[in-house]
Length: 396
Image (cartoon, rainbow, N blue to C red):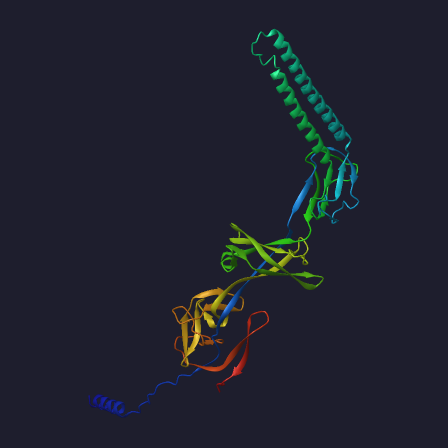
């Protein structure tokens, strides 16, 4: 018992008189970051798309009458350019169907018409003669329609109309033996040659128009909402780029219409751009081009780098040497920047705020940070921002 009591006493003495650790608050180490000032400005939305170059008109020539081809244009070959109607003149003659049978049909129709007119004249003469005879023997009674030859005259007039219609049809068939270019075009494909016999409805050639061309450009529903409007219709300038001979060639055009229908497979809307309306150079038909469309101009917009965004809708800012994770309303996400409304309301980013360009590995609200340097934003020739670093302080 004495030994146990002595041990307890020694233990109490040691606890009461042992060394004590010094208590102090841990030092909070600041993380160095690079920031840039938020600058609000007008931003013109640039919409990207791509599509195939198409002609304004594409036509398949078919025969309206049958017969043997007696003439074929010496340039009736795929790829040849053909001139269409100009200054009241007809387009170039491409094909000629033998006209002999159709000229004979016109002559026969003219003879039938002449006979019908002669028959009407004869009936008019017989009517006059019948009325004179009726005046002698009719005893003052009103002559009947048969006496006046009304049915015969009506029949003769109907035959004249039928003969005139038949003559007009024969003349049209004669004209249809000539197949001419309906507009300035290029032969895409030919189906017949000299000596071929054609029948009505038979395809003769495939044509594509020369001059202005169109490009159908699919846009997402979001991009479609940023198109400029003029008079209730979509509008905007378009720049198309394509590779020819190892070089990038550029063509300028404009939006002319929207198809106003959502594609079920891609959930996109096609807008149509026209190139060469003023006689400018156009991309070749069938070429695949990339296009940039100038859209709406958004006022008071701040460009935020992707590195300064977390969770898709929060911006990293520096407020009094503390990290501020602020939620904002994103207007649009582009390749290099996120567009945010500038302002002091909820969901807007105040102009002049320090946006963190190089965030910490694990950002935490109110984390202490030190701005190592600020980046001054400049606008490149393409309209995007590029940064130059201006050091205002370097953390040791």
